[in-house]
Length: 131
Image (tube, rainbow, N blue to C red; front, side, top):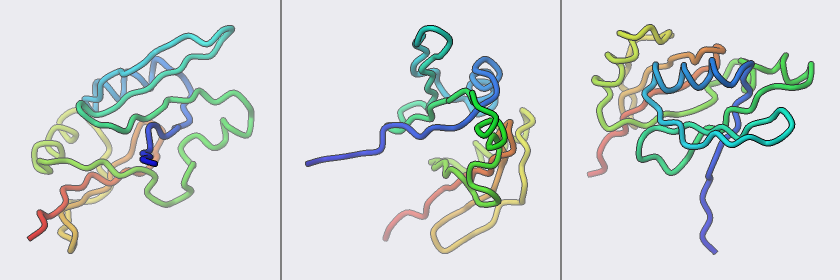
């Protein structure tokens, strides 16, 4: 049986602000925005061509609201792979994405941490080509 991860849920305060940030700052595409009556929506965004999407899940309970921006505590939550680190890093810097650290070389590739609009940490990674 073949399986793959389809979506990863990310708690957000507001659908519209999250959609705007992901599409305008990161260049993600709005993949789905389906009403779920009475007040919910199934909203997903993803980098163009990606098979995995991020589900923007609006927090509803007090506990969920407290978790916004802290879903992985102080760890990196998501890993965004790129085929052109310099292009994406420069684009993010130019549009005001908070870059937490300078790019660095690791044995697996080039990486830098950035934060989303809720201060969740992401790695921007360009993996080294396998020899």
